Image (tube, rainbow, N blue to C red; front, side, top):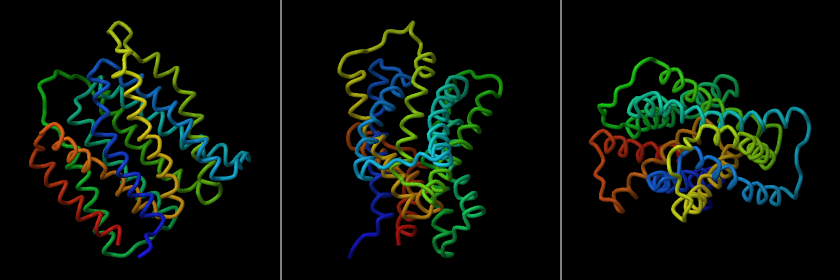
Length: 286
């Protein structure tokens, strides 16, 4: 049986992001800051953009609407990532990640209301299960760090809105421009924010410039970049209300890999989320 293009690209994205999530902390724990990891990620977008343009016969949509739409998709993703760094500096991760992880709610709502995307009642159940699973998968045990104020909450909500809106814009752009052009402009905007990421880096700490630093980060971040490209293609062929919730379940694979490599036993809440995620993927991919 021939697999549908949207299912293929969606599963590739989920697979790549799942593997990426399992290894991304290695450079950070080795002394390579996440902010510089952003810079490496932006650079790994370049070869992916070249491949995308080659696939599209080097045709680039240059009209104002296309430039704006593609750039907006890139800005929402890049700025959202930088704001996340700040949110984690000012607030507890066990509260920040559950809020941000539900960004597919924004995409589903906007796509259903403005793009009039519809699906079966059964798949709506799958979407609901996926959202609950995403929340469970982002669970982290509370720590005893002392955080004050509500800046972290505001920043978390900002990222939640930006990432949810980004996926919607990517889907919207696919209706009027090529997927290759969308990714090209996403790459350009990601590169433009490299100076901001560098300025956010704590240079007083020792930075690991060895293999486990930028070089290993590049190997890992290329998975993220390719996943971003296949997501654009998934949104070209599939409905955002289904594609985005599935790709947001990538932590299932991350947890499995972590269990196999590091013998990390997930919390019961996370295990429950994994079971829900598997059921949701089965329902949504039918």
